[in-house]
Each structure stands twice: as C-alpha cells, then as structure tokens.
Image (cartoon, rainbow, N blue to C red):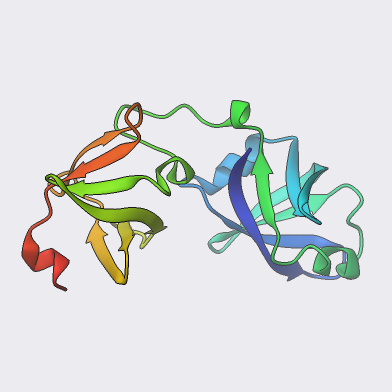
Length: 165
C-alpha cells in the first residue's frame, strides 16, 4: 500500500470529498479507477465516480458516498493505492514513505532517523530526529550524498553550521 492523499473535508452537499494530495502530481488521481481509504484499522475500496482539481486539492466523488454526512465520516482518513499502481520513478527519486525511518549518517556519525519530509513547494526539508535533537536540513544533493535503499541508510555531509540552526 502507498498513501497518496489525506481527506481534508467535504465540498458541497452531494458527498464530494476534498483531498490533500500527498504526491508531486495531483493529476495522478485522474488515472485511478479505485482507491483505498483507511477505516477502523483496515482499508476499504472505493470506486472513483468523478474527480477535479480545486485550488491545491483534488475533489473526488466516490461510489457509495452520496451525502455530505457520508463524506464527513471519511474526514481525516488517508487514501492509498496498491504499490503496483505507483508511478515509475527516475534515478535518484524516492517515495517519501520509503525514506521515513532510514538512519542518517553524517560521515561516520549517526545523526538519527529521517522522521518526516516537509514539502515546501520548493526544496523539500528532511526532518532528522536523534535522541532529544531534531535537525531540519534542505533535501539537497550537496548535503545528502547517497540514499542507499539496498543498505537502508542515508549518507550525508551536512556542515556543522546547518546542524546548529
């Protein structure tokens, strides 16, 4: 499973849901026939009946969600797809969920684990948490030399000035 969005709220009175896309391409939703929505610690399949962009969000009509109350019951839930439906990535591109939890080494020193990625609209910012310390570092190639998915680690060269911010 791959999470691609979060339901923010409802739009109108006919069951349309407002989704925050957690993907670089919000139009990615237009290629999907079905999605999965988390419900009671499991995933429920929904067929997409209609979709459109609205500001920075995606609006979806789902089969079986026909009233505002139906849509409100889904608020706050995550939307996922089967990993097999994920888009093809270029070299040096990664899915955020694959990076989360990886240990980050600055040279030979373990800084901590990658706990979040802030998407700012420009350059992403990696949040690295180690013990009581949290580091916020721009996700730039000059700082992160190598993301080694085979070894399950991130190798970095982050200057001390950045770590002290």
